[in-house]
Amino acid sequence: MAEQDPQFEQRKRDHIRIALDSKAQSELSAGLESIELLHEALPDLDFSDLDLRTKFQQHTLSVPFFISSMTAGHEHGEEMNRRLAVFAQERGLVMGVGSQRKELLNGMAAQEWKKIRSEAPRAVLIGNLGIAQLIEAGPEPVLRLIENLQASGIFIHLNPLQEVLQLEGTPHFRGGLRALEALVKACPVPVIVKETGSGFSRPTLERLQNTGIYAVDVSGRGGTHWGRVETLRINESDWRSQSGSVFADWGVSTVQSMMNAKELPLRYQLWASGGVRNGLDVAKLMSLGAEMVGLAQPWLQAVMLPEPMAALAAFADRIEYELKVALFCTGSKTPSELREKWTWRKH
Ligand SMILES: Cc1cc2nc3c(=O)[nH]c(=O)nc-3n(C[C@H](O)[C@H](O)[C@H](O)COP(=O)(O)O)c2cc1C
Image 1: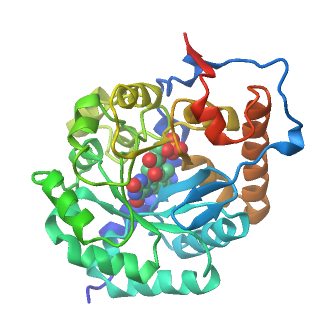
Image 2: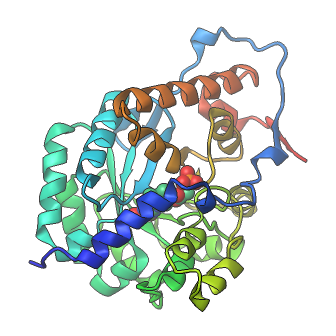
């Protein structure tokens, strides 16, 4: 069992601190302002008729938006994850846990999750690991991560920009597609491939078609930008900091990633995240075809406030209300109706 790795812990502390800084947010938008939902002046609905419940495998979730994966890894990390997991259970929403990389090497990290699990036994949690770690470890250890967490699915994150700009990064992606196929074959729960804020081009989405994965979460550019986060960790006098700045706008926006996916007869579900900041954003992405919509940084902001549980609840109430207003004013009773009707126009 490996000892604590101080460099790893410090990196995670940096990530949380920097992710809360506005300089880590993309200056280019997610593209959501270019999408207009079409107003329905005569919805055949009462506001109370709206139904946000969403199925994910055997679970019925209360809402189609979720807490996107965020690594904790600092001294308050366990408490932060405990709060988020308890909240996810209370509210009936999905929580993607942060990268379980540490757990591959350090059995103590699994204990942390087992403890959190005992407080949130019914939370719908999705595990998380980077593709570089999957390539290196193969499917077997990943199955253990899923088991330890009693996860309902596993996110495999793709983050080439972050790995290559991070001073301690592991930009080892050769064999990724094969590693994914092997995991899907061995895995008892859905495998969901996600970016971390740089989105997907059409050819990449196409290459994932025959892997058997359950979904792609496009996680496009427009919100937290990992090129920016890693660059902000580097001393400004270092030339690597200048190189990082060159890539400050890199990536495919969330809306463009969705458009890229819409061109294909997809063999997996489409999920969306990256720069989602209100319930109208959620509605727009659902109208573009997303089954589930994730937010990361806004939940982090809420859980860091002095009254974290109240802040999380207020934020969820707001997103839920705004999503319902969008459903009502497009005459859609459910998120699937919004998805199935032609309710949007692109400027
Ligand atoms: C503090 C922090 C830590 C993150 N850690 C992970 C991670 O461990 N694994 C992962 O797949 N994505 C991770 N992400 C990326 C998010 O899941 C998401 O894809 C990205 O931040 C874009 O969403 P946002 O604009 O709502 O923040 C992290 C994001 C934040 C803010």
